[in-house]
Image (cartoon, rainbow, N blue to C red):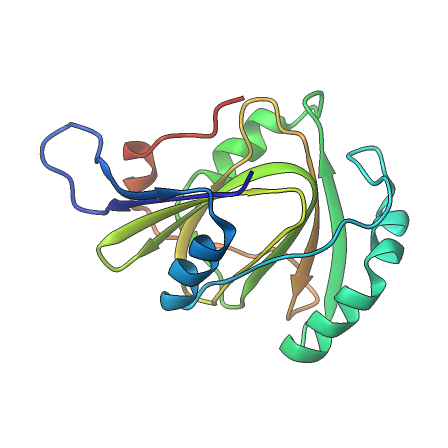
Length: 185
């Protein structure tokens, strides 16, 4: 079940911040994110796709939705990524994505299966969006954020890019991510 938790980005002392909002209502998630310029949708399920599905199977199953997103956003490159709990680089990848960063292009993801935690640092707030199967998220270029896939990742996602290089991050050096909850396995 998709979730949104909103925290203050300013904390007192060493105590973790308390959330000002926590919801699993998809309509509220979409509205709160929309107010902050973040896109959120839930797409219908297509077939029996999971972490074992090939990139070709995933892209074929969602070809109509992919074509619409590409037309609306000018995304040149689309791929599908799957990470499982036995991935040999799961710990290194998790640490890399846990560092706050930005992109010079939108970060757009659709979760075919599994889940991941997007953490968005917008102004004086941190929004944690737990995306699960059928969730589509669009984070505008320049938005400070980090991503947690958990210690034992298990997800498949479609990724949309405006450039041919794919995922390119500019790390902020801010250690803010260390003050917020991680994705529990």
